[in-house]
Image (cartoon, rainbow over all chains, first blue to last red; front, side, top):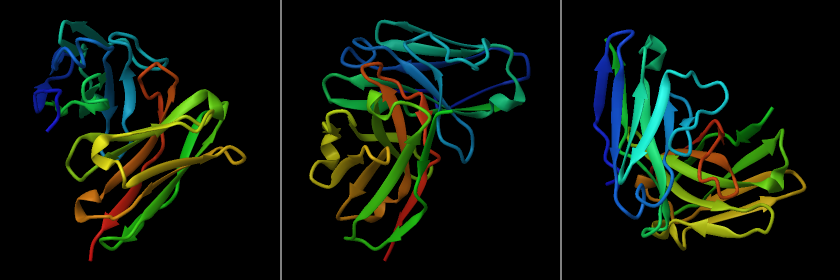
Length: 110
Length: 119
């Protein structure tokens, strides 16, 4: 059972905005920067957002991240069919001394 | 370009050990940590630990302490992860991933290695 809680699913029609939440605690999100990974079916996770709100080169600007207190959020604006994937938040936990991944959110494009 | 290329799928019996390799190329090997992350079927990723190829230091997840070992060969830019006393719940895809020291995110990942544990 992960210490980072995400909604199991989210969906939207093409062009809509889809938010994904990630709830943690003072020992993880409250103390360290949050990263987000996208995992397409059958592939390795891919870094989507790092340091709370930074996009690696090549990641479209429709993906954005934010953090407040012990929670973080990923937003997908202008949803596209290729965005159908699993999304995981991740952060170092100072109390558990492990890098923890969220429970994951499966995004479906209707 | 940066590449992390892992060894092929393995099938093991309970109690055996498995050693998975991760060969790095396209960057300075000793400048990045290598982490290992596993993902059981239908589950989220689970962090296993990391190795610093520069000084050989390692950090392991407590739940795997005593069963996991990470090593490196700087002459071939390869990192190895060995897991012993395998159980059925070790069945997973095992990934290596790199982190620039103290950035706490993984910017490149290997393709994954399926390890199946079954009697």
